[in-house]
Amino acid sequence: MAIPEDVINEIKYRNEIEATISQYVNLKRRGKNLVGLCPFHSEKTPSFTVYPESASFYCFGCGAGGDVFTFTGLMENLDYIESVKLLAERSGVTLPQDGYDDSMTKIKNTVYDINRETARFFHNYLMSPDGKWALDYFLGRGLSLSTIKHFGLGAAPDSWDALIKHLKSKGFTIEDMVTANVVGKSQRGTYYDRFRKRYMFPIINIRGNVVAFSGRALPEDEKKGGKYVNTADTPVFKKSLNLFGINFAKNHCEEKIILVEGNMDVISLHQAGFQNVVAPLGTSFTSEQANLLARYTKEIVLMLDADAAGQKALLRASGILENTGLKVRVVVIPDGKDPDEYIKKNGADRFKALLSGAVSDIEYKLLMAADGIDVHKDDGKLKYLSLAASIIADEDDIMTRDVYIGRLSDKYGVSRTAFSTKVDELRKNKKRYKHKKEVNDIIRPRFTAGDINPDKRVHPKAAAAEESLLAVLLKHPDFYIEAKEKLPPEKIITPLNRRIYEIIINTLDSGRHPDISVFSEKLIPSEIGYLVSLQNGDKAGNNAKAVLKDCIEVILEEGIILNSNPDSDTSVEDWASYLKNMIERKNKEN
Image 1 (cartoon, one colour):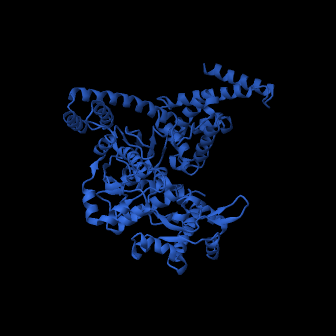
Image 2 (image 1 turned 30 degrees about the vertical axis):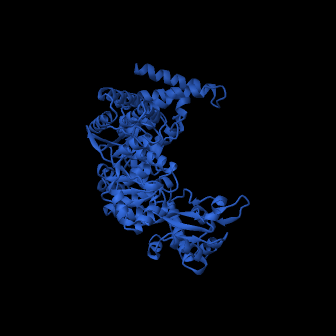
Image 3 (image 1 turned 135 degrees about the vertical axis):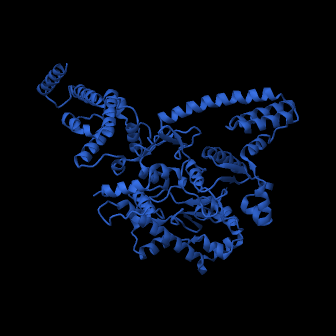
């Protein structure tokens, strides 16, 4: 049974969609709607639209769409029931104790319980005599016992089943352990501890739950099993949506967050008094992580490793962060050291001075562009200025561009007009490329995984009519009786539209209004996005009654054509009768 409609409506009323989304996205009014940069994919031109009238949102860039529950679920990595619970809790609405399916919530809670018990197991082992080898490692890295306990650090014993036995003793099933990804299953069907003889770092989300683990190998074992083994995606964890240290940093980052590369960098800086530090989780920095940071701070200081890989990652992260509206600065660590090494050698005061000398990301890029180029020679100077023009062309603020154009023109003795013309030319080229890419993104949006309704390619006319039919019913549900009488669900040709049509009919039959919340329980996010695009588009037209009538006719006619195939099970007599009735109906109408 679903959560009662009046409860859902009360939660939506108390969590008005504009106010809820504004906590994550900077929205600007455009007519009766609002627009902003989409939090689900990287973009510089706003394609994310909020429709207060229908209490929904839709992104024309990636296809994400839905209501306040859908949005919260996507932002917080929650399923529908969890989103309802979270918003109910935020707004003080009491949910009924039963009457809805919370099976996924139960699975997630079990995984959380397993992760918490696993973290406790690893930490207790670290602090035991058997774990001295790992404790010595952490102490040797300059960590205090209080820091080790604060981060819940641990160690995995050199065993294939120590964790399995421990979790079984706590009442967990082997299947749940596999779901939590702390236990693996071999091709022979045997089970084993995923983390063995490793230094363990629990990963904790914003709400303080242990969601995953990162296990570092002993130096002598790095070549055998890889330096790090990380939890794979589970019902409670997705690497691209989490950051190491965010559970602590969120309380100390109103002004800025420092983004570093590794777990030890976070821990060492935290111990030295810099608690506003986070790191990605063994993957490239993502737009989801950037949007997560944008919810908590105004500025990001990039402090990634000084090696080639670190600098490449830094430039990529800078590009992603540009789309969040955050101020971005860069710290160049001297002597090619990482933050962990630097602060241990130089102390907190020197690190603070280094931090205060952070440069803007454009200055850093201009500095790096000169690396390896002899700018004292004419060909080197031209090469550098060409690279610099491309970097400046990426800057949207006209005053910032003007400052750097003037500065570099004076420094390298070139005509300001010529340099400015080059930058403008590159901006036009980049704009054309960007437009082409955005069109591509719309044609192949991330959330739609290709075509959301692939059958549209096979039945384009029918699918187009079905889309208009759905749009009419979403805007004018009072027309559903006529639609239901003339067009039973089985006559809808494409499966996705048939499923949506059935939900609309069944919902209206039950006396409930078919708003987006109804579909949130039954459709995946990409399908909900498709539905919102129909609801807020113009397919219903100005004369919805006439559009509905035309759509029904087209769908029925396309069904006759489709089923007139010689392989059809329908008899010739049946189709002759059907065609005769349709012709007679049309003659009466004319």
